[in-house]
Image (cartoon, rainbow over all chains, first blue to last red; front, side, top):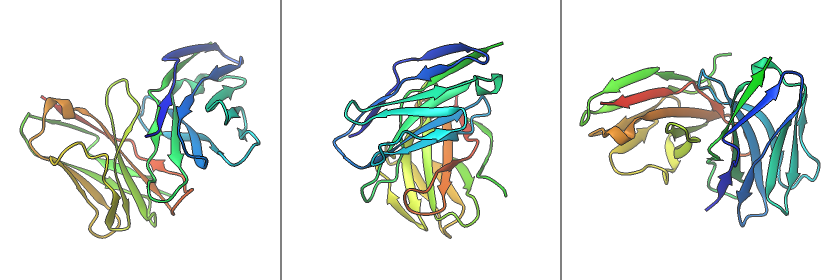
Length: 116
Length: 114
């Protein structure tokens, strides 16, 4: 079974600075998808960024980018120019690309605080 | 357009009671998912529907949990003989197509069993 580990329960960053959230995963599959979701206090999960494992190029979405290291099974999220609205829980998630299971497997999350 | 909606937003029930949680997916989305998020944890998969049928129910913890989606749209998660350990936020998500369709989440139902 696949597992996702987020080793940082909490992180903090100064407004306008850069922060990196860590994620590692364990799988025997070669084809899969990785995601970062943001969950504000409203509870609604919002997709931040997605990476297909077959793509070597790291995904980027505005101020959000990832460092995908397939051999190391590492998938970190970098947030540049942090804003107060970035404060939330961040979850790393894995989904198999092989047939059958569409479920997301989530890590335990990292609580990000942005200080003004 | 409208996102995924879930009702009720909060539900308090007594141990041993029966509860139903409702999910209205985004119109036209064929895939629907239920997850459970306990305090301080990430969401855990419960069940996945493709159309009206449950394509994967491997995450349902026991036979007290059951979900239906009779017309391929609205889904109801049903919990019998609730236990205090069932207290959690129950999240629903929908997706427009088979992979790699993005899963769009609703705001969840917070269930508290006293």
